[in-house]
Length: 51
Image (cartoon, rainbow, N blue to C red; front, side, top):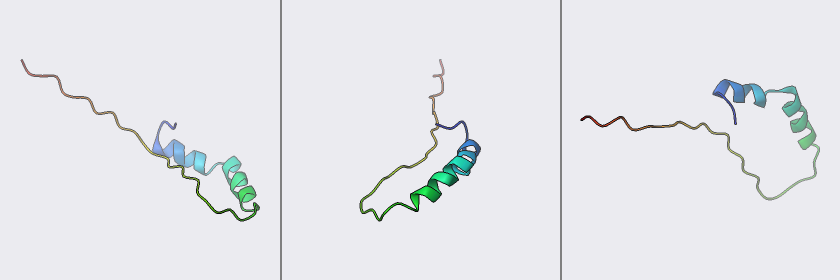
């Protein structure tokens, strides 16, 4: 979980992730899938009822 879109971007561009991606490219061919979707969450609260 990330505190903001900027924090997610920073993590995706980190040296550790870049090294992992370079290592991944050395793997043998793979057929199949691996889905992972970063997303943001917004909490929506109802307004108080008028009395």
